[in-house]
Length: 245
Length: 332
Image (cartoon, rainbow over the protein chains, first blue to last red):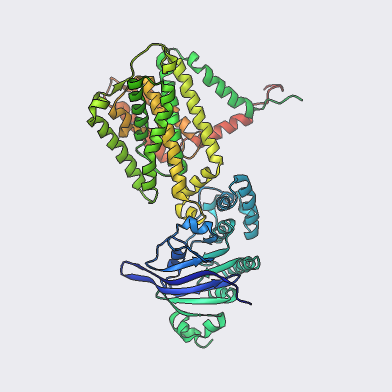
């Protein structure tokens, strides 16, 4: 595929918590229309990177540009309003209200009239396959449906760039297959996506490019086949059993 | 074509009619006083419910806004002879202005800071009012000079007009809450109350939404303070700014059902009935017994009905509406 223009530009991002260096001098770019995979062992700084990009944490150093705009230090809601929306690794539904109203909350960003936002929420629910559970309380959904809801709410804000944080953790193989199809369909509709994921089958099949983190730093970047063959990645992340693959 | 009179229409109309004739059904002014207090607490609980119920930001210092309204109005009425019909708006506005720094400072943070700040604000105001006694008359409080039947000064011989004014204000708060609940702000407050991080991630400016809710809540509470001062003719710092009042405002909404339109009004009726009946039943026998019974009731409600009694009322009301026939057809 032809490389599109740079949507997200992360330059020299660093963050420490007390004595722990969570992210160190991290730089990468996301191009329009691609799916970028971010992988790395537990504690390698993937989720912190999402927090830094979307304004939930303030970086110690470094800059983030989104669509050419400097967004470092903006509040999370302002980042989302610009078209950069993220989901949470641990789903954060609004538990006591209906699935439909959960999604409506996201749709209100672009459709201030609650009736219009409600109609938009119905479209999004159908797209992620949650339309049958629209009236259930969000807190009573199963794990996969809570993940679907996370994605649905984020889609309802009509983002240009979507950051998905371990959307597939804890799903069974069939559910992973469904999730892969959903995310591929998002790209087909013109969305740019960054996925943080532990499920290798998903990352390898979805991603156009992959960034590998280890202990807060980028140790490799490339196409899935390049990453799978990179000795440093195999050593740091995939483990010895992959070396023969 | 004749419009059919369904229970959905005539039951609310019947309730409204009942509220309009209620003071005439009561045997003496003491009972009218009780229903006026119910209406005042319905206003206060409803105002509290906007920031603490819908938006989930617990205030235990709403007396700060109540006392501010009461003192600003009474000082103005006494010094300049301004009509309370004007000062009721000013009292609300001053309470709103007082809420602005609170909102700007506290809503940048999550956690218990807002609750602590509300308690601190009310207590600081109480001490200020006690301290500046040349202006505020200190612990003795302020009185509204009695002018007899003077409607322009919001003074009446009978308790009836107070009842109707309080009822109108309470209904206005209900209608305002309903309108807010259906607006974008109302949805945003619910989202914030459910999970603030998730709300922020969806583009909701949580600090701004909470500031707006607090402004509205403070304004209505300030108005209620002005009305209360006019109704009782006397205000003093411990009553108007006290923690006891703040807690009672919160309890009205909690007992009734937080985050619902009608919950605080139902809670106000139940709590006031309970306070009065325990006083009548137990006062003079064992000192303090009525407070123990009152406390036991609150513990019971919070244990067994943590979402308040509103869901029970809702079920009962729906059953009633379903059971009642449409008017015009043959009755049962």
